[in-house]
Image (cartoon, rainbow, N blue to C red; front, side):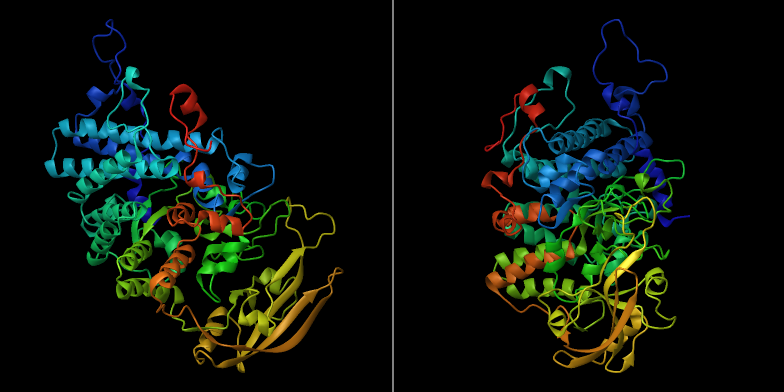
Length: 620
């Protein structure tokens, strides 16, 4: 039984139909009594259980297709320099328009998220209007109200960042009220701040929730979200206040193992401030398609292959940063579930890199389309970096450096030096079956050596392979592999290397500036499949791995921004980050995208302009 199955009760209850909330409008004078056996709003909110179910319904929208799946990924990652659309060229052209910054008001991403987030707001409004009248425990009532305020603020925060001022709706509307004008962005932010401050005053800390309620909004989550709001508002004093409140609460710490954060075992871990809860029930329901749309497309067939880490993101990581391997799932790499299955290259894909943070095993109950993968929304490292950014803006460089370096220390994973490349352990199906390497010899190879790194300058090269079927590499079967280059690490200063752990153990004898003589076996295969193995000795200077940052001023701010990219890569933060930092035009130009200043906001969906008469954002 999965550890988070205990939370299935309140999560599954969140899949409540909107029928109970849609019964508010009258049906004519001929109807004088509520239909027997049918739940409408007036007869639904009569017990504490129903108040809980209504709140769960507000949460359940977080798992929805239009809130945290397809369009949302496009509007946060794919549009940025961190990702490409991925998948096949003809699939989901609306995401390609986002990728190319060639979108217009008719793009379905905008209408989809607009509808999804307003559905969440609607459910919060129904709950907030009716829970106060329920005869129930006052403390529980207050908490449920606060949870709905937190969620309403969360939904509005996405909308105001994406579209600017939007219709501000704080109660369920009657049919005559459905057409609402746009409110100013300041008015929307005022409601968000008010809702979050009210929630902070009531919500329990994370440690005060029972295990069965783990994943509900907490005081720390509301404080962290409000810190993020103030960072976007450039109110650095307030951002600092609320971010440090989370830090000083003692409720959170950095999970020592960065890789673990994004696994099932890492859900609601010590560094989890808020994540969207999901559970893959054997009977169906409770899950999300978040993982499916980003999963491996081809062999093994786990998903649709969208939102692929970009070459620019890969190249941006500092040499040897372990987070690179934790972020990108490469072709010819073993799945991170321990199954030994290998990701095969798919020639129909535009970019054969996958978001490893969204990975779920092919064996997940209900399949990847109903994945129990929790979506990490706010992590403690994010809070530390928000606090660091606010501190730097307030001329508190010492505090900013401390929090930034805490994140970097955890990322080092106990290592202190690097040889400047990303090592990986090769799957036996390639090492033994394809390359014919003898059992017991090293399976550690150079996965990625940045062309600007000392490792590359010393002669090490990234792993390179292609399909070797001679006829287009069909993805309907597992194709044979032709390895074009594999630099296998045999030893470090004479110490044999056989596993990834033995490689890292060998590095412990090194210090920054010392040299390492690497015994390398460079393996290549010809078109005919013949394998050549050339022994080499490559001398590489050891570097400090992710050394502490001592910079101040703009250099410190730049370091914090870079750290956000590496720490939070592929977690749907990048676009809004670079927009609020005022760097979108510069960074998009660097990857050949024509960003225009008006693109700091997305267009109001064309249907809302035509039907509701909303004023369009400038430039569209």
